[in-house]
Length: 228
Image (cartoon, rainbow, N blue to C red; front, side):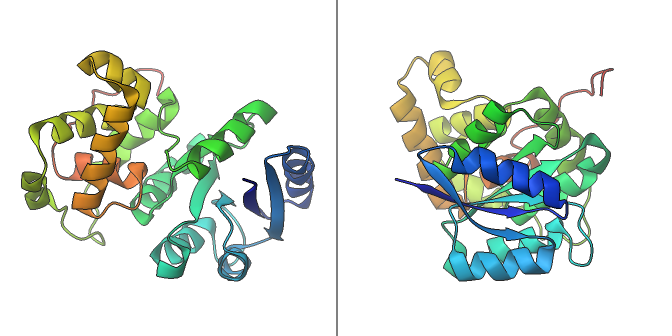
């Protein structure tokens, strides 16, 4: 299956570089390019790509607004948004997580990491394991957000004890394989528990499951580390 990718960035040269890299892979292709958020949302609606590689800071409509529009569209429920970011914009990244983004990469990302990230979110998983991303989650997802609805903590009662346990470990940034090792089960069993928890909580994907884990209080943020 070919992964269809839309690139959204106001830097023409960067888009061209990413296009060459992505189109060189047999399992993916670039179907459209956008220079701002409004164009990204419109082209995503027109092409329904599997993954949108989205910059945050763009003129006019930014990547955050575009991410919200894309993730709120029921016709685009199969489209995943992979955010390109820098540490200076990490407060926007947290808001993008709430909006439904599935993962994050730095703009100085290497070629292999970019391609792996696209494949990861296209498969339905979320790019939440890097230490830097965990730092973003713990620093911002638990901060009060006056525009956000109350976290559905009451829905956690619908989860089994094992589903809550798996959800907690996923919120710590652990992969299915790492969770399986901790719980002495198979990665397939972990994936099943994650999917059931997502279904019960109405989470779009694994990233939103992590958001709910923190906002509901199921997981508490770790103390900040000096390097962050």
